[in-house]
Image (cartoon, rainbow, N blue to C red; front, side, top):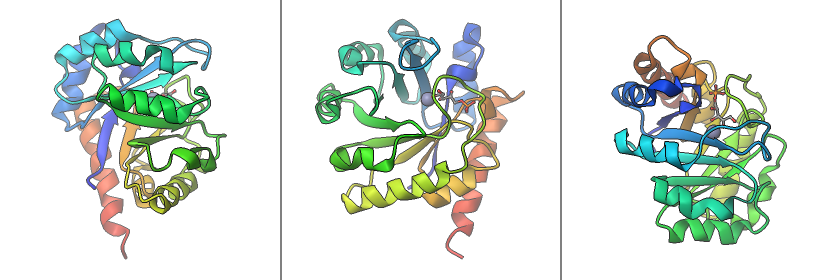
Length: 226
Ligand code: DX5
Ligand code: ZN
């Protein structure tokens, strides 16, 4: 599976979201990652459906919407209408995970399950065969620009093993502190989607930064079999 790069617009200049999306797309971004925060599940607020609708009008690539909100099942339809292509919900925020994942699929979207750094891989055991994508958080969610938690690499490996045992080849996304220094190792461990905010929009040239992240991830992927 080719590695996908999903720049997180949380780190972009919100007065120029269209420009940010285009810069990432020029660099070969495969999706735009959109962080939704409610001030309850995480100690921060970000954006909701109206802004996502605007991004949808300008983006050519799919929107990967990461819901860091309590009781996400209340809002699935609203985010589907706004133009999400993938909806990831947190296992810590959703009591009936399986039902919520089914609802996302019924809306015609890809259903993702996200895990906080302190949540063990086993939290996904019961839905391992149902998820379309797993999002492994490599920082505590809520803010861009945090330092990558190194044990996330081992967690990706364990998650890949769990998905394999469930016979599910779903991609694993990694989100938080992803940059040129850890991209290769993450891919070698089994990650397929790299979400990056500051490593892309925190750079002078987001187009170049998107290309550089892909190059870093592929370098290790090629080296890995040796
Ligand atoms: C954090 C968000 C991330 C964030 C990543 O809660 O889920 O998507 O934007 O930003 P960086 O890459 O700067 O850690
Ligand atoms: Zn995110």
